[in-house]
Length: 127
Length: 332
Length: 150
Image (cartoon, rainbow over the protein chains, first blue to last red):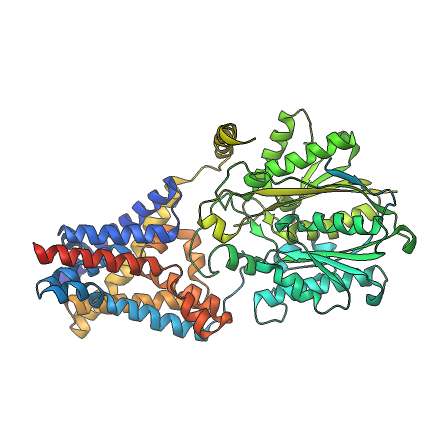
């Protein structure tokens, strides 16, 4: 039992370290270039796609769990992973695989955003 | 020649100002006619709130001038939103002609100069010049949605929520001793700044160009004025302006005040200070106008600066052309 | 000034303006990004552990469920007007996690609601996050087609 707790704690440490590091790299890129938030997100998502396309991001996911899947590069990983799995089923799968694997995230973003937009008003900023 | 002189000395009679809660925490707080506790002003959208603020400022300027609305001959107004909707929509509440002007944040001095010119020529007797801006509507139009969690770069400025109306009349019709002496219309100046967050640096050359032209053509030194007021260069832009004029052998350092620099008590994310058409309208219409009336200041050169960009032009990578118009206002 | 002269002058002026740039606080920014980014990933990890142990999800379903919950969290914080405050503190630390993606979808939706449910809320929902979907689909499909021929 004690060892399970230790393992869970270790998982948290790994997730924190890897996730934090990915965000920190993004911050360094922002500091040294004038890329805006949108471009950073695209760049990191593409990095995830490319790394998974080369088969590398999977190692990071296996190692860090949420630390690798929660950053936007994890979204790229998901897209690439879906496409790779789809490609095993043929051309149709290769084309549909990417988006179908990411459908949960996109659907959730659309649905929740719609609900929030209905419920909330935009607030003016004091500071 | 860029400078025109008003020999009939049209008078700046009164102002009407309104400002949001954040602005009123600063230096203008004591002098504005109305302080908003809620920057929606009881409306459903920020654009409507901006329009209502502008309407209020115009009405208040007329009221403070102890004139009647039917006596007013014309409204000259503009704002920052696309197709100057706030000004046009505010104008539909009034029963006098409307002249829409756009000079981004320089709209104030452009409006006052045009009003003074029309009065000096004898075409009209009483004109209201007004402008305003709203942080949230400007942010929506020029930058990102308000709730987006992005960071503001340290060069950026904070659009002022506020509006100011200026009642200008011919010499005979009022007892004001505050005259519009002359005006210098500026050229569009572009030094190649493309960073939309660094408006101060983009506008400073335009301000320097107009101020230098004004001083040269009028033969006045910087010492002639008690204050040289720029619109919204911010802290960084003000430093650049001082450098640029100093390079040309004109020392304005001691006389120069920037509305954007003084409008906020910089606490958190205002960084370089305020910006927007409302910035100069608010600071000049309340704080500086009060000091002019009390004769603590006698000669002021108002140089509101404007960055003439749009989201389309900056999206296409264009640099930011800027303009500055100067209006000299004196106690006579 | 026109033509080449102007170009040179511009270059000098831009360099001169940059000399005024306030110094970026690299260490502070990076530390904050690391801290907040790490914390958000830890929240994700926490959800992962709970869903794995208590509900018995695994694999793709597990990561999808975690994503959905984090997106809900991101949109909720956006709705309450908290996320932009976190963003101002954390910089990339709150932009890069999936909650930042949720924020970039929800914030224009809330913002442009005043322009109508169709051309405001719905049409402008993806003005910030759209490129991620566009390039994500392009790149993902490219990877799929490459793997098809391998």
